[in-house]
Image (cartoon, rainbow, N blue to C red; front, side, top):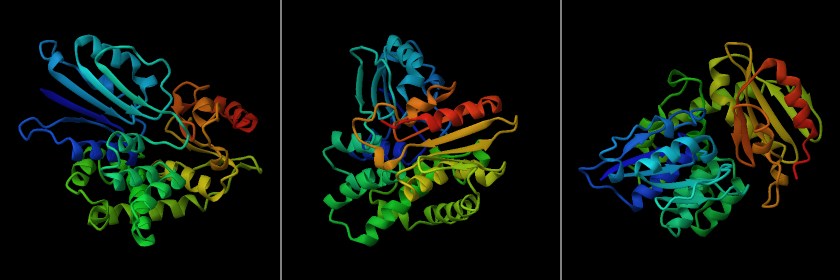
Length: 331
């Protein structure tokens, strides 16, 4: 049997896969091919090219990757004969009906993929689900999960710091922007059953230090627009802004939970990458028009209810985007 693990390179994707592989270790002579990338590298299934003679012996596990953005590739892989397990919390759209597809999908605002895997495993490696939830800025959900483990405040704080650090490392325009490629970071992480032990490593401490410095730089940036309902920030073109855009958006959402936020970062062409956060106080299972809905109104946009983004927003459409953000009711 050939195994392929496809996962988002952020905290949620890595921790979701880690839980599964702790519970379901693969044979030493058949390690999984790991397919991942930086946060903006979403079309991961398109990278898979199966040998037709072996496709029926291929088991693919996909975690924290938008089905909507990978539908065509997923259908191609299923038609070739592969078996696919799919865990995700992003907007999925129409889910293919196929006997070889097992989909565990939940787009609820306060759920991440690590939490879906935690449910699947009946809480067997819950501490890693706590890290995943903190990494996805779902602090309330993470705290509720941590409470079931009876952790003290110090241990819970370290899991929170670990989640934020892993998530921070996923942002960048290219591999040179980040300290560790997500594949290498996952392989380092996978040696640890205990996330608190991993938190003490030099790897994590280096991430925490650079995250702290980058976030401090972002916090010195004033908003270009702000009222009680939403705020817009434009970061300068710099290596630190490429790394910190998601972390900064999450920090703003935590600091101002009644407000929506958009963080724009210029690219080399003068256009923008955009990171959007819905108001944390508005998140509930009834929200129909969240951050993902807003971003899908623009090409290359998508995500989830609480947090979404646009890969490439033309400068000419910047005012249109800000107008759409301001018009959102966050229902």
